[in-house]
Length: 207
Length: 207
Image (tube, rainbow over all chains, first blue to last red; front, side, top):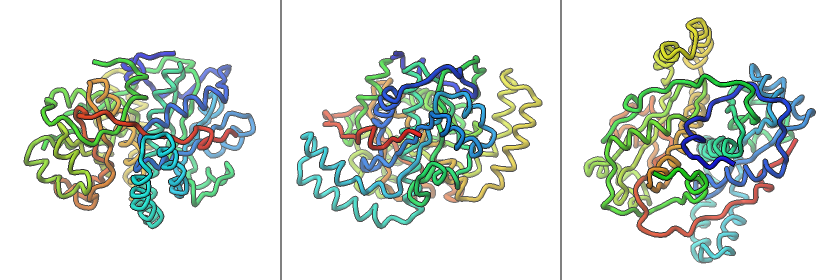
């Protein structure tokens, strides 16, 4: 296990071809998702949902949907398809009750906060919910990519896929679950040359 | 400097009240943004833009726009307002030329890739660009929160603010720059009780 933050975060590279012999157990995948979902989310509603595609059959389903990213599909240990749940508020009561049970939130605060958040989430325009779930799920996606590195794996965040078809193809309600990205995960079978970044001064202003 | 990944990533807590005596130099802020923007982005277009509000005047501008988050505004070292640039492709030529100059991309690949990406980005529907810049900028936002911890700071990601007014208030073209989130940064002046998470099994399926 790598615990070197600088190495994990600043030597991360997007990897397109993986060692096909590397598999990841469901136990380890769940451990990485547990760690990834320590990421924050708006009012702790945790809208992220993970579909881990690691079977031959699953990869066959995904292959026609990933455009020019078939190498990652075919060689990765898994394609982790991250969705945002537009009805994430259905778990609101459960989440806040858990906080009360664990003794980190008084019952009165739970009642007050859910009284504010639930109507907001239930009545939010579709565009607003889309933005919330895309932002929150992306926070977990970034943390997942770093957690993967701490477990010795490499990743490739993939945005190019058939976003209108992927939920239904994976058996999900496409109205409810909006695709965020696919994170291919495995071990690199080559040395990446890295990529460049704009100077921080070019993307920052102080006010 | 903290380099302990587990501590940085899994002991991160959203902090609402900061030590008002803590200031962050522009040099250190730029260093943290440099590190945060090692995050990946779709076709490396790096749509994230940072407005670091750390002056009295800037905080005064922000105060009426942050709803119930005035404590963070008033006590943080800075409110880092992250925007997505809907015209990020204007830096495409520069980014890919830099990759050629640094010797990590042949000129022919640059030409081929920009030939694919630039028309796609220039002609993308507004909704699609909105999704791209929100997802990409959120990846950088997550990495920024972790980098902040490695520098000894705490953060609070804030989604509740006047998103229709904040760009114009900060002197930006509101059509071009869409707000992603505000990250308040400073040093906690209290011990957070943390928050709960759904079990990974509840948000994951294997296919």
